Image (cartoon, rainbow, N blue to C red; front, side, top):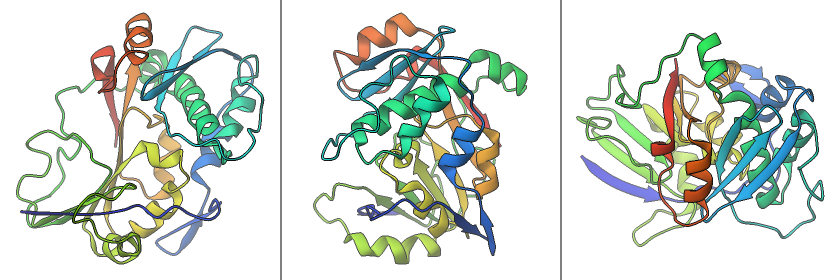
Length: 263
């Protein structure tokens, strides 16, 4: 099994529609915002070393990977005090700092134990993100340097690692446009939604089995209408612990929550 890497293309504008198998589908961001309301308000934003957290008025807490970028003016001076749906609109902001905060708000709304119970989902911390998928002799793309279990890519013919920040030996950005359409399986980091590459990545992956994975993933079943085969995200269960941890170190937040999968 060989590993190759290239860099994610940064889109010049937000794609508001995605073509999936010949059909124009609703936008990733619109689906999330439309499913929310302003009944709950944002009561706090926590900026950590690598993660951003948001708390809502019902006590729910969500996180998103912090994507740095403040070259343009924010949509809102602060998300604190705004209704959850209003604050979520900032996910469209080209201030990536603000968009990261908005994604944390979205996850505080969607990724809760109560919602997981209503969706009849059980925690699956030991489950591989490709569990049940046929990976043998398949060409796989990883969008981001994802930490997967040993079994996740077992038997794959070839694995391409696609990363925004090129490292030695990486393929050029333009290679993504050619590689993803030829892949059998596409595993995309949820943080691609913050930098606005998610819609294009989904479009390029429309012929592949597509998994969107990571703590930044909103557990919203309606996203599967975009051609996503599996959503693998996280629900925070130790708010105090993760708030303390995220302000001190980088790393994985999974010890402070439970993993869930929507197929």
